[in-house]
Length: 106
Image 1 (cartoon, rainbow, N blue to C red):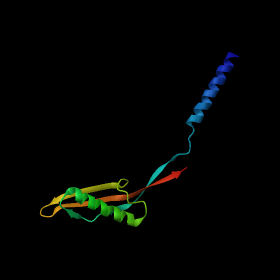
Image 2 (cartoon, one colour):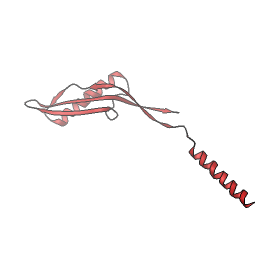
Image 3 (cartoon, helix red, strand yellow):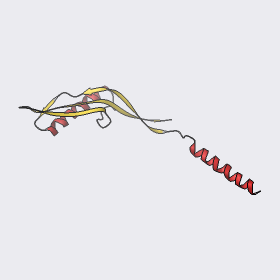
Image 4 (cartoon, rainbow, N blue to C red):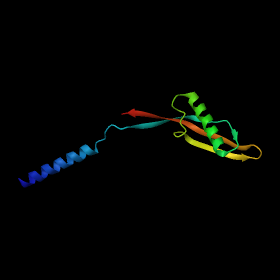
């Protein structure tokens, strides 16, 4: 009788472990990537202003293609760079691949 009780506890433990290990439907997000977009080269007196204008131009261009792709935060392979050009201030350019986050349920 004692062995039957231990066996039933073992059976319950195995059943609970199996239920916990079973995969549940996943909920999450998937990133949908599109082609790269570049801003125009903008010239500003300060690097900060140049970066802001370059990002603004990138967001405008990225948003022209499809709704939801104008997020610099989600962009892949992004680069925002400025270089000092003698006599013209900073030349800045933003480049990155458009990415959108798509929520789905399985």
